[in-house]
Structure formats: structure tokens, C-alpha cells
Length: 56
Image (cartoon, rainbow, N blue to C red):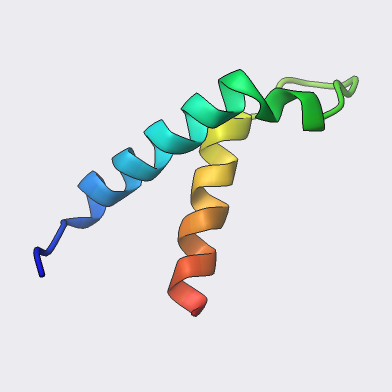
């Protein structure tokens, strides 16, 4: 089995999540008033996917 370093793994997860989000995922997130967030939705989903993988 090949090992992948952490930054490559996060980049790969981000690309997959962002591609999905741009095509379909944006429909599931309502537009809310208020200040702009510091993270994009794709960045936040990437972190959540990675955190979930660490717990399992």
C-alpha cells in the first residue's frame, strides 16, 4: 500500500468535494444573510470529511 502525505490527502479530498459541490452540493445549502464566512463551503466540508475519517 502506498502512503500519501497529509497535504496531498487534504488537497485530493478538497478537489473531490469542491467538484461535487460546484455541480450538486450548492443546492443543499441555503443562502443566509450576514457577513461572509472565513471558509468556503467546500473547505469546511473537506475539514469535516477529514475529521470524520480520523475518528473511525
